[in-house]
Length: 110
Length: 421
Image 1 (tube, rainbow over the protein chains, first blue to last red):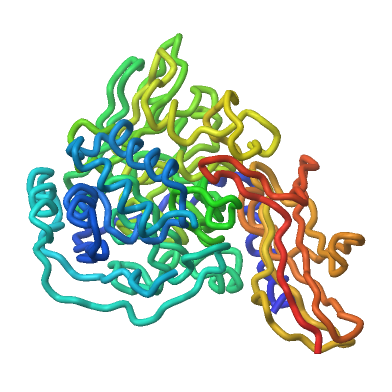
Image 2 (image 1 turned 180 degrees about the vertical axis):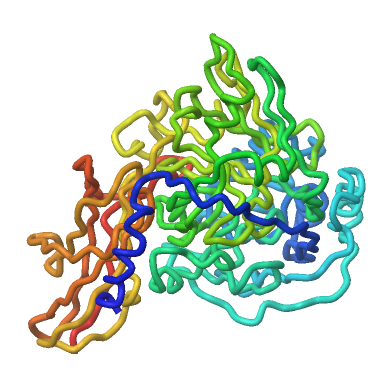
């Protein structure tokens, strides 16, 4: 495998310079239209699951939260406040406590 | 982990169709508890990332257009990790398995190359509006091989754990980028005296209207260094949409946060950029290795910038059995960070002694470099194989991991556990 790389050294020696001008033939691009998949995953039922489902899933799918490590309640509160203060998440003030409680219960550091 | 956190369910949706979706629709749909969902397509297989304390289970998804099998970290906005065995294939990461990372959920999915334009404006003599035709036919074409690595690559290995995308080591890739020099369009627009930075903005938009649009800035001298470029191709093909089609900034040697995707706006500034994504987000402690003690406060923070060296074994997964007293091939990749790889060393005695591996072809100082060696484990037992890259500036991977609250810039010496039998 490694030995087979040797001929490539010679061929590609030219690109070992940081930037190399290429031939004059222009690159062609084609328009793209795709559909991105979405997730319908909801947070597991429990006290506060309505609050977290209603407030958090507009901006990101649930997997982002559920893949997080277990964090302290203080860390979860900081996370929710970061979403509100920095990323302008429109979370109703009365829901903040319920969301933090939910996260501490399901994803809290033991 | 309890069993209630199952794999992310992937479905095709009608609502995230190209530009038609509005913030109001998205917010409204989420508020009533479900997006307009149609066909369900469950992820076929799962993988387990060895993150300390877990959770490590992730689906392998093939549901993203123009992409092959990827580790699903987040569906919306997409965070897709490259399965690590892909890195054993060579120094160029296959485009369809190159990792994906977006900040905001409103990503245009219908790009007409006849309508797209790139604006160069701000502190310049003349504003430019360049069509793709202008770019492809009017600007000199350049190529560079360069590693694109997320600032938070390997964040999932931080201990204590930190919040953020819980990547293993696959939020990186190396491609041969083709495009044009940023300097060339800045010169065309004519940068006025007094310019200090250049700010880059792409087409993704936040769901919440007053949230900060994703923008990043580079100092004017860096922007004009002749190496920073705008790519319209990677590995000889146009970029997949989720990798930034049609144009992506390429900042060789710097973390990927600067490599703005779907780039359509370049603004020359006569004042330092104070936007959230440059000044607040993506900052690191101004300390060696961006390292602090957990809980430490009052540390000066600076924008993340140049990458640091890393190396990985790619042909032997941790936990593999190998023959004792017989030669075994050890192979991997390395990169120097902001400069070329000088050496890759390995150790089978927990770092007491190191031996040099042979380096493969040099395909550009900012790219991956393959390395290989033969090693022999003298007798049956458990061993740890360590790998360490040193770059041409003499910077080597540290023996102990760094820590910072954002989980940035991990580059500790890597290890693979093997059992000789």
